[in-house]
Length: 257
Image (cartoon, rainbow, N blue to C red):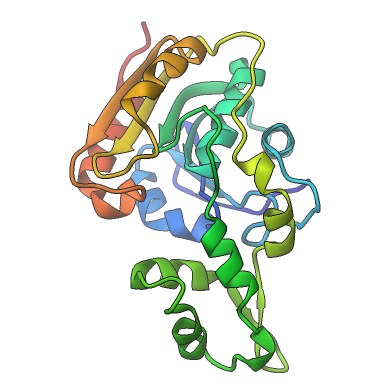
């Protein structure tokens, strides 16, 4: 699958992968801040953003998509940064093709299986009758009862794509992602651990990466470092951008060895 991407800056290649319901656009502020030191590729995963849709979605397939993207872009090896869903794709990719990864950064997600993946959000979005929606304000109001957090609604509604004849469609492949939810909650799989340098960044108020996850992290990623940004939630890069960027830049600048 040929993934959509945008590139900015110059220097060593850094690939950035967004989370569920996101797109490359969510990471443009971070990409701009990193573009002085890196050639930053912000990528849309399958069924997201401007990348193609497909009925099948799982971590091995998305890791293969990333390998294909790198081959087509002529990137032999790159640093890879992934958040949430993108973090699991990044981990799966590094475990299968370790020589294609310089340093690995995973933001607020663990390699384990999760009990559910935003079931309430899927149901709310699927229940939105787009045929009756004429403005984003109407869509926001229709979702307010089931998704009370305004910032979350605003993020989700970035997936509304205006139609030339009026009205909207979902840019994200909502039906495929909903049907394949069990694959999105699955653990990453590996025959051998990733021996490269790795950084886990977790939000201090988020429960996505727990203290109990450390054992499995260390098994699959024996050279991983886990850092917590206090006061930040799951969207660490949004809640604490300066602390996040300082941490990422420092890690990527560290000499190997």
